Length: 388
Image (cartoon, rainbow, N blue to C red; front, side):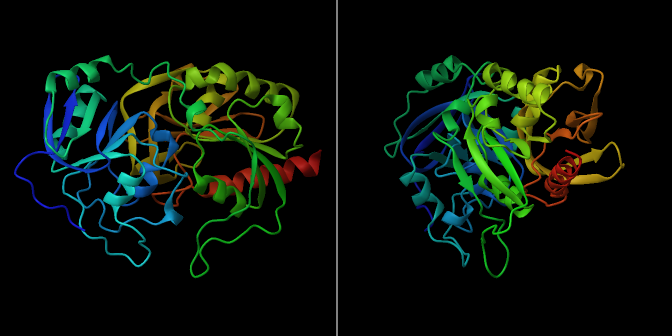
């Protein structure tokens, strides 16, 4: 149901530079401190809030109609929301969608996530673009009592995402099998009953729809925790290794992930495919560097050029770090590039089926232009098995 109008603000968003926004709180009550980013996608707010890559971040949605289609358990990318909070222009209205099972406000409240409505999100987005992703404190208090000085101080004390390993916080506790495929009308989610390839997926914050795409490409997927060793990966006798998306600083997660990836590359000829954080850590393992971006890329309309074919794909993105293309060593080629800012969006080894992309080809939410990357991974495993 729609939120009732209140003459007194019930939520407050305080930035580390002292800027303060007041609005209407919904979802859980309480306070959270995080980095603030904006997302330009027009759909998929539930998938965004449950994307593990958003750990440690409050998300500002530039599209005003957030909450209008409610939520459904089928659209969760992980068990519970991972983003720390939500900032929207308009208060959510009564949901209107045949798949909806719950309204956004109740869903957030039940899962302990704070949200604020009635914010000038255009002004906030411009500030993020110009000044970089700020540290913020977000509080929801139905009584409207705010200690603004304490909130600004809390925002200033937030350590930030640089140097922070968040993959350990969102990875699975133990290994599991995955065989659910992509949603398709009219049957919804179906099971992969005739897989051709055994894939080990390292879970640095894997989205369910990525695993579904692997299954839809003919893979029997075993998911392992982020801290798994090369020996644990190879014990499953995989045909290929997948490196998932995830949150935090790739250099921090790379402290334990990069040695594992290096060992896989040095001791096997297995195809390797990485997405987002997996892309960044593969680059680190190959000798490149990563950098923190000013405000990152978060949206479902990012044009990316395939450097081999010249084709332009419209992609979904969610990242605050990037691979420094100037640091790529000999034998590692840039395959994709952002047409927004020229940043690196893909690499591959020149002589082996080892590649990765910064964008999200699973398209949840977003366009499906890049699904072929999963099929390319499956084809690489076909070739590798035929020549082994």
